[in-house]
Length: 197
Image 1: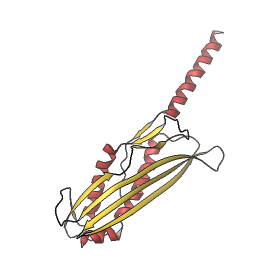
Image 2: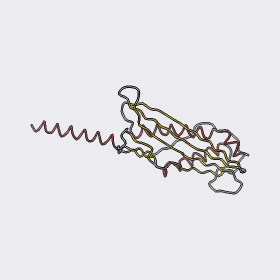
Image 3: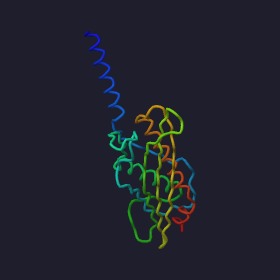
Image 4: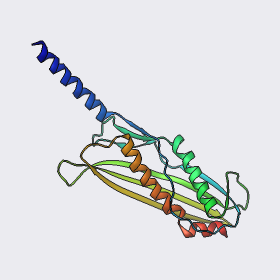
């Protein structure tokens, strides 16, 4: 009798731990990196570079399909934007310019904005599989000599899985997504040409 009660309590405890794990929120620290080549248009000119967050919230979605779920996925602006600032400065430097955060009249400027980042839980068309739909949107705004160029770069990824991804897997997927967005933004020849005018 005692053994049966012990097994019942053990099973209930394991189930509650498993459910808590499924419902636990994820706080992700992302570090996307550009790997694509950039246009070589600069000749050492100084360019004001700034990264900013255009999202309304740090919460990008939920790990489950339930609207009441506590399994939120959060990407903090305070952690991500400084990293995007470094990536934007590196890209501008690789283009041949000299990045600076100081503003000056007549100086070309570039704003890299994370316009949106979403993680939507969906149902896969394959039995026994779940699905996550990820989308990241960057906006690059270049200004020089009274002209403004705005480029919008969208990256999407759909991932099917039998077991919900953990923090490491979600971090890897989102880093890949945003890295693709950075590649798209900084390889845009029209943006580079505007800064070089």
